[in-house]
Image (cartoon, rainbow, N blue to C red; front, side, top):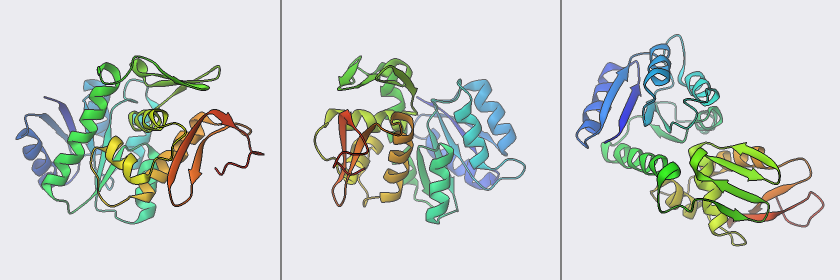
Length: 240
């Protein structure tokens, strides 16, 4: 059973989400605005947050950014649940730190699948026996206990989604991993390829891992992404 915080100023939507997640055995708490939701998240440290965007006083993008900036709430998976459906809105959601993005109106089974996938990932990262205690490839070492990566001599803090993407790429390093495979292995479901979702998270991961003259993730146009754990520089022929 997971503890889930639903932050939404629409009481009917919040109750719909709460009831259907409680039917799965989860314990749910609701907050009717971003300020109260941020306070509850910092106080109770839920296992997952379902977050609306368009709320009075403090919008969901700002709440998400503040959650990611706070070390105590940084690792909590965040599912944005919003009526904003444009690509730019989805990109803004991922840029603010969301792990997944679901547009209203939504189907309950899809919500449940998204929540299950996020909880699976969040539960597996620190404690799962399916992940190695330490995974090393080239210049990169993953440290599952605290969602960190060591890149050369640098220690980099990752979000749960970034950790899972990097773990997937490291398991297949030297091979091209398609966007569909990333969606299936990281998000836990296999819809049509969501290029924007993958692209934004890869961009964030690159920002954390790479420097001006050292790259690790190669874009294989029309194919997906490939991890070069030994690193390559801007003068290499590899595309990035």
